[in-house]
Amino acid sequence: MKKTIYVDLDGVLNNYNGEFDVNYIPDIKEGAREFLQKLSDNFTINLYTTRNKLLASKWLIDNDLDRYITDVTSEKGLCFLYIDDRCINFNGDYKKIFNDIKNFKPWYK
Image (cartoon, rainbow, N blue to C red; front, side, top):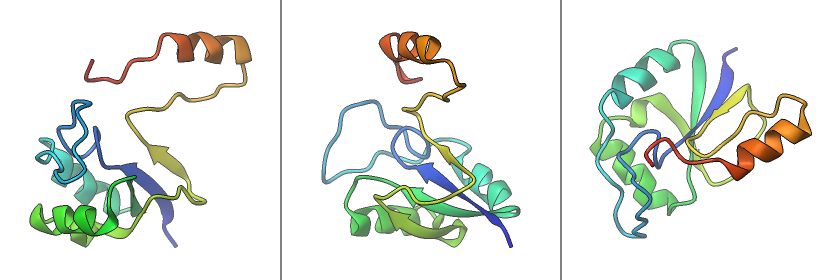
């Protein structure tokens, strides 16, 4: 049985730059298809997004990624790990995490 990984849509699989449009999902990020293909060999992949589920599902189909994704959801469920462009890994040190939060910037800024 494969472990599950949740992958964020905006900023991970597409060329999101912080300018959110409810009706438009940016183009696929270079290398995303190959990344999901390789990841799917060993993991079950769920797409995590706060976007409309139907719009996100259509984007997956249009970009030939739907074959790698088991579910599209806005809820982060039980899994092995999350891949997200807006996260900080907690390492047990609250002082460090506070400083990491204060200084956080998404990779595209």
